[in-house]
Length: 452
Picture 1 (cartoon, helix red, strand yellow):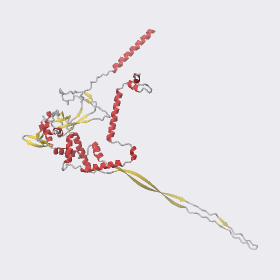
Picture 2 (cartoon, rainbow, N blue to C red):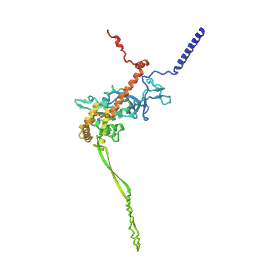
Picture 3 (cartoon, rainbow, N blue to C red):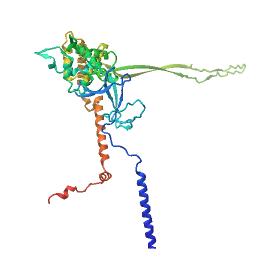
Picture 4 (cartoon, one colour):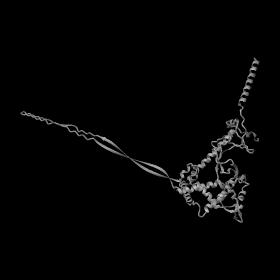
């Protein structure tokens, strides 16, 4: 019997080991995923008119002074890449399949990209949009010592300007070898410089007036139509919005209702009978007929109309703006927003300050913002008066957050939630179970290691 028991136990153990080996073999994946790439592929949308000679190069960013990627085509010009990302609250990814369709050129030895399928972490999309080459040559005019001699600006060649930024702009010298690209850059340099012809070569001298006129012309063209909705709402409508005043209007409504009542009163008097006594004599007997008199009084039916008058008072509060912006003011604000946007994206802070100073001190000014400035000052005074007129009883009312503060608070909350999720994901099951233990009344571990 004992042997039988042992044989059964060994058989069961053998069956368990066989099942374990079966489950482990089944759990193994049929495919092995490669290691994460240090240089993952990116998704670009390039213009259809760009030729095969177009290249992605690194040039100096005119705003931040750092090398940035641009698409340069000898035939159609220069393009910048606009990055479009998915919101962080809803992360997404791209599934990219690079098939050999005949349109993909053979890779070079320096190119590390290979045909295959990829899954990217982020759903970033890079769209190539045209950019004015004038902005790309602006860093060359930041250092005025190149064209200054004895305190006077001199006419110098385009090579003298471009050589000053070749070290910080990695591929500039390479694209200057393309004849059409060099001609394009020099033509845009002439738009913001005074030029003279010195033999077969054109000499340039930076002009602040032409630079201001060129940027202002772009802003005027941009402000001819409404700006994109987000910019229009935030920088035009909201800035020009005047404080509203609540006006109470009391309207009285009079309603008349008529009620008809029919009252019929009947009054009848009691019937009276009068009889005369009979007189009899011995000779003659005469009889007198008795007279009965019945008197009845009836009152006529009367109908009376009763009128009921009711008065209802309704109080309504209307919000009336204290000030309205004229179309001219809106146009000036739109122009100022466009000018600021161009400066904040494509012009360095030092040159932006130069343009703003030149715009204010120009006589006569190219654009008169006096009407807009006076309107903004009046709005500022009205807002201060509205804030001062608020009663002290409103101290308990919660302050209403604007869009920026609300977005910032939501962003902080989202980051905190992501950090909590990361911490929870890194914890083991044992640590999570230990956190659920009730430690009330227990001594801390440090108490056992104190000196007695």
